[in-house]
Length: 390
Ligand SMILES: *Cc1c(COP(=O)(O)O)cnc(C)c1O
Figure: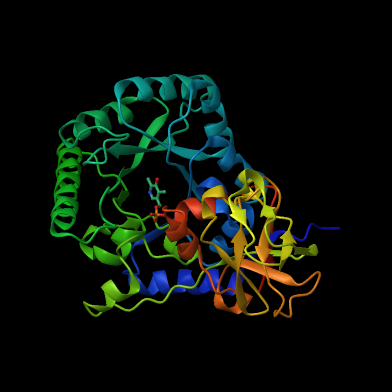
């Protein structure tokens, strides 16, 4: 038994995107796929297994629990924790081999103390070294040390009994913008990252991994690939904001991404609504004439956000029909009128790739909801089960 509101993960499209990404970068650049937030709503386990098959080098998660979920599902490739965790969670980093970002004396000490407690030394005196990444703040204003402090922090990490600096990471904040200002700031971030690297090397430390950018940098800033790049959104088939297919084409770069997820449901009732009657909470839609509506068992608790109505149309048998009135927690209504061939139990596609029969993508919904594809995708809730299709 399964509910009719579900999401399909189009495996071939995910593979296609990963292949396109591979072709876009030098062969010696490692790929770290962001599978945080349940792989942007795509089901982290399903997605990570495919990414692993396609030769991903690393996976990136945001919480320790996300990392544990992948390990328990049998994922063996390296996992990086991008956000910070608390001391109670730290033993699980060691147990499940999830390598965190750290950057200041405080969080290095906490992790180091937890590691000292967790790892007991071998009889021959060799002690386990746990790999960590140094986060550098080159302008994101989130986590990280300043480039000038990077050498010192790197030394401090390597001075700890059970820690070893595996890599250095930073994050760009306007690499998805194409204004002159954004481009020059991104370049400046690259320069700051290089300063951090120099400072680390000046201490006689040579980390293995240098990583600065996500999807947008992968597409638009080859000089900022260093030896690892961390794409998320493009693997799921969406361009990061202004770095679109057309923008890339304008300087001769060619990449064609395909949306991976289709969000689908079925018509569970068709009703005739009389002229003057209203639809849904708040009575925001009043029927100007007699009409027919289809009731769909999908609502904002599934990730179909309230702010998508008015504006959203959904696709039934290749045609778009408008959502009327407010989207409820678990249901919504679309107007099909009297001329359509829509029948009870017909399949409804909210968004997805072409081959799902969708006329919308997550970008269509993002525009309507005044947000970005990332939020549309990550809003799809756990209640919506994900199924793989070829
Ligand atoms: C989310 C995230 C990424 C991936 O970003 P996309 O824009 O989806 O490619 C990479 N690095 C860090 C630190 C992130 O938080």
